[in-house]
Length: 132
Image (cartoon, rainbow, N blue to C red; front, top):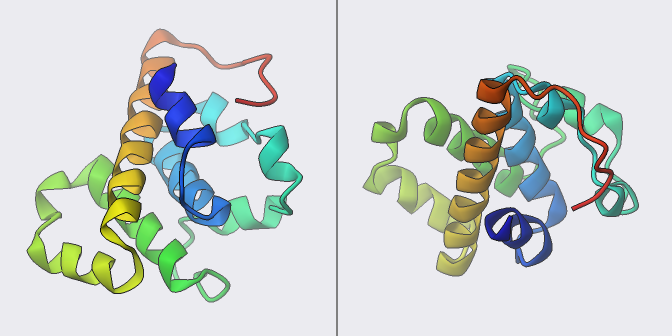
């Protein structure tokens, strides 16, 4: 729970960046809990269902900032092809993120990937949680 707490309550990332990455991991994990979860504190910050529906849709990134687009790409690589995360990719990340933000995003990706796969593996498909 400390890793989840760090990702949700101690992250220095903009909420849209973090949620774009979380949703892409949820899609790749095929985790029904993660796909449906919308934290109350995130909803109050103006993220709409349209935002979540556009994550991961090919050629539908026009409304995502460069940071959000990179977070989505990093999530894809982290979950599906971690060996492709090389110096060139980190150079691209550093164009939009500081080193502390890159570390924060990496910790968030770890939490999202691990929790989502745990829920999926255990067959947990619902949660009463509305916030973290």
